[in-house]
Amino acid sequence: MIFVLVVLVVYLFLKLYRIKRQLFHINTQLQMPDIQTVSIEFVDKSVEQLALHINQLLQNARELQSESRKNEKWMRTSVSMISHDMRTPLTAVIGYLQLAEKECNEAQTRKNIQIALERAKACSGFIHEFFELSLIEAGEYSVSMESLNLCESVCEQILALYPEFQARGIVPEFKQADGEIEVLADQLAMNRVLQNLFMNCIKYAIQSMRVFVKEENTVKLIVENRVNHPVDAEQIFERFYREEHVRKSDGKGLGLYICKRLVEEMNGHMTAAYRDDTLVITIELDKGNGCQ
Image (cartoon, rainbow, N blue to C red; front, side, top):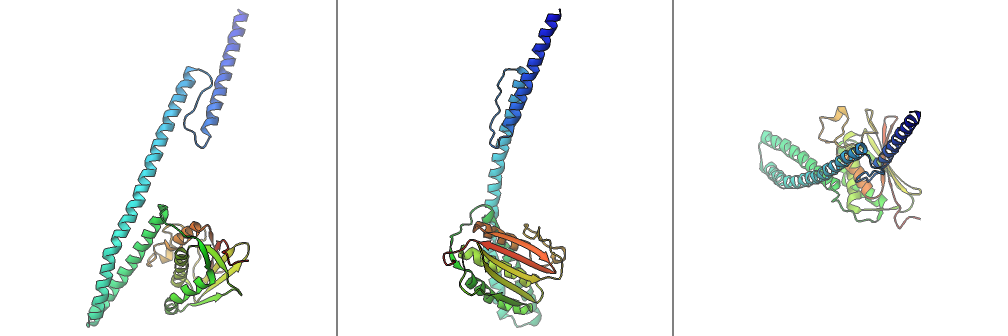
């Protein structure tokens, strides 16, 4: 009798050990990043049934993930197409409003047309940003990397926006380097980044904007401007993020997010910091062929 009990205890102990070992083996497989199915080493009905349920759940998860990717791609493509289609009629609306503004002689009507024109242009700008964002998110924004004179690009964009700086009473300061500093970047994307950065300063800066270019292991473009409100530097690059006090403005919180994504497309980094009432945005890019 004692012998039978000992044999039974040993049998149960070995079975428990094998089950624990099998569960450990399954758990190890589930931690693998590209797990497709789990396998079992020993035949046990309860463990085998558990493995079948786990494999079914894994299959369902793969199907849901695949469907989610398809839906996400479809959504991005749809948004891109809708944004593109909306730009055409809106451009025509702006054209007709501009024509009506020129031909109108009545002061009040002319004022109303000007307001409508400003609203239409703001809407057009938002749709353009949204279209650009949809291309970036869908991975359809292609960049052509080349060696660019960064200082020259900065000067060109400051001059292009100088009337807007003057209208806001902002004095842009650009401390150029002694020699030419080149970066590896896409010309159109770089221009877009600079435009968005400077337009952000035009909207929210106080009195001045300072721009620096530094050449170290990489090339750093630094844009500083004083602001009259605290800025959350950790969230400033989030999509559709705007500070509470500027929610009634024309901005939709896409400009800096697009900047960051375009910089990343050019293999660069973009960061922000807020200190002493000053917002500091830094862009870091690889050196171009003209840098030593």
